[in-house]
Amino acid sequence: GELRDHHCGTELDVISVGLWDQLSSWMEQAKGYSEFKTTKDTERARALQLDKIEVEVQTIIQSFAATEEENDSGDSTASICGSSSKPNVVFCHNDLLLANIMKNKTTGHIQLIDFEYGGSNYAAFDMANHFNEYAGGTTTKEN
Image (cartoon, rainbow, N blue to C red; front, side, top):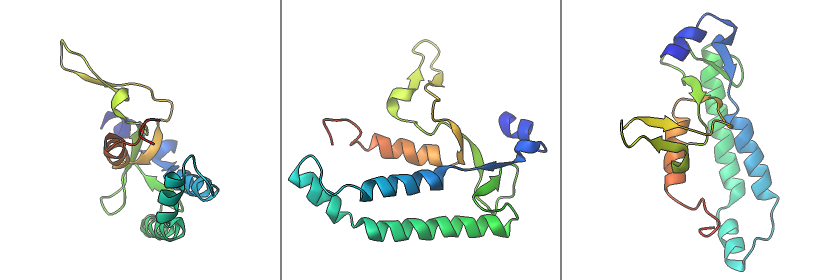
């Protein structure tokens, strides 16, 4: 609330979201590997059918871009002060794994740490990313 109220009506009213560039970069990296550490990992990666996933991701990107253009926000931007008919863009942590959430045992207050990836993103990103990280597969042992 306060951060949004502070920025509305300023030059920061329309901000760029890096989510789509990051997804595209990850896709290119994933497609660049033909072999992994083990045969099982290579088979698992091939089973993902990255070409189909890439088409789905591009469809989602185009869907968001169309929504934003309908609201006069331009390509890959959204207003943090905008209407409910488009995705809300806010300041996000962008790396909300369990190790970055601290709880004070005395007060019970929660504090987020490690904001090196913090920046503009869609409001739901931190929640989705947190549960993705919470599901596992983020340690060397699990991969």
